[in-house]
Length: 203
Image (tube, rainbow, N blue to C red; front, top):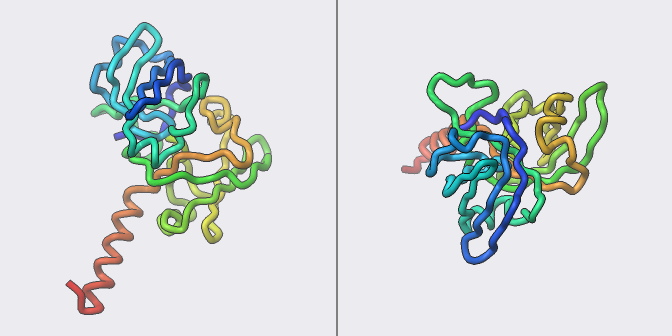
C-alpha cells in the first residue's frame, strides 16, 4: 500500500527485455533500507525488489505489467517516480494507493496557472466513470486532486513542489501516464451496480 507521495526520482540504469523484463533502477534510497521482496511503486506500478546495491535496486516486470502500463515504454535513462510502501505509523499525506495500475491515460494539454501548472488528461471511458471532481487519482504514482471532469477528460493542478519533485514537471502533450483511480470510488461504483441488479430482479 502507498500514499501517492513521491520520495525519489529513480533512473532506469539497465533493462533486459526477455520474457519478463528485468530492470535496475538507480535511486537515492539507502540500500540497507530496501529489503529483498519489498514493494516499491515505480511510476505508480507496484514492483517487487529482487536485488539491491549501493545506489540501486532491481525488479522483475511481468508480462501483465508490461501490457497494462507505460513501463513498456521504459528505456535506459527513463526517469521514474518512486515511493516505498507504507509502514504502520507513517503519515498518510496523499490517499490510499494500491500500486495496481488501472490503465494508461494521455496528457491533452498543459497551461500555466499562477505558479502552478494545469494538466488536462484523457482517460478511457471505463476509467473516467470513477473520476469525480474533488476526488483523488494517482497519476504516475502521484496523488492528485481532480479539479474538474468533462466527458472522459479531467483536470488537475500541479504545484511547484510537485513539478520539481516528480516527473510530472517534464510532461508535455501526448505524454502517457499510469492511472490508478480511487479504490473507494471503485468499490462504491461496484456496490451501486450490484444494487441496480438486485432492484431489477437479478441475483
